[in-house]
Length: 133
Length: 468
Image (cartoon, rainbow over all chains, first blue to last red):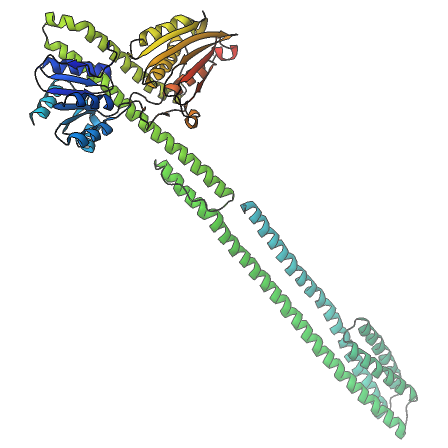
């Protein structure tokens, strides 16, 4: 939170695959970043679709964790842009309320979903599975 | 046309029909006694004619001395009956003919000698024969008159029967018409309304009712449709609000759960360095959760008018500065700047007013996505004070300004500025809280140039609402 810009904030200590996390809540972003980087992933954080697309322009991630309702550019628009540019080569995991995370995942053709409120184990499992495919 | 007007028209029509048929019936029934009287007169005439004939016969064949007295008396009575008939205008031509015949008989009889004749002369014979023929004629005429009167009476009778039937038929027609009228213009539309009301009762707000006419029921249908539309909007807004609230609550829960589990992974000595950041994060998310739940609760409570103010003497500047300090670091792109801060000690519910100030600053940050200064000030104005929050953000479109304070309304919904964390109740709750304090809220804004929201509250509550 001390950074003037969330976009581009990275957890690059690891050597694993690059995971792009997109969510408008700074606390959730940082936490997921910290947790995943602790597991050895490299992580990039974005607060909305526009920031996320900028990140992808710099380096194509191995996986995108995507919240749906965000200001400036929401998850639906971002997913469309991503699919237009990279096809289905980058797997997407939808992060939204558990009640309709499946539905949202189907809507945008995501690979899997992580229903909120998730816990540590679910987070690790979903990321591992998505990257393994 | 209004139902009332139509009913009045029907009544007027019914009245007209009744008056017309009634007056015809009255006229017909009035003529019957006159005819009966005339028929009685003719009966008398016939009787006198017979008497006259008898007298003449007695004079001619039996030569009775009383015969001439009798015919004089009969002829006199006959004359008065004929006069009466003439006065009643029974059948003018016939009456005139009979009067003339009677006069002739009278003059002929006058030529005969009063006393009994032993042998009547030829002339006398001829006179008597002539008189007899005239009497026969008159008898025939009176019979014809009687028949004609009888026919007229029959006719009147038939006509009055017809009018009674026509009246009955008219009444039946009007009744059938009324029935059809009530069914078409009242019962059917009422049935449609009933079905519509039942549908709304079951929670189906989607189908507007057709407005069949521009009358009272049409008006009621209009009002009903308006109510249905309002219910539909409110229900949808409430559903969206609940769904958004639940979504919003999930994020802090996820953060709290994952943070705690993440910390638990590490042995205590490794946990230490992560603790300050993690605890700050947990604290923020707990506050957020608290505010969300409070918002949901407040909306429900305000619906039920349950909010009670806990007023106490409060340093307004301190309150505002506390919120500003708390929110200073929420967004790295925004700077919260306090301007004029008049020292004020006011009788307010500090928790509620803090909530309002928080909402205003939160909105200012949310809707100025490119960052910038947010100015906060407190100004004393007579016995009130005004807290103002100004941002340099996207502003509010003119066509949406009117609805900004509406419950569940999100002015930026559907635009790229739609904010995930917005439940659409912040400003609604804020204004309700202001109103409970006897204060008010308003704003100035131009699209693209930011907005300034003001909250005005009385320093000391008015005595009227102190007790409430």
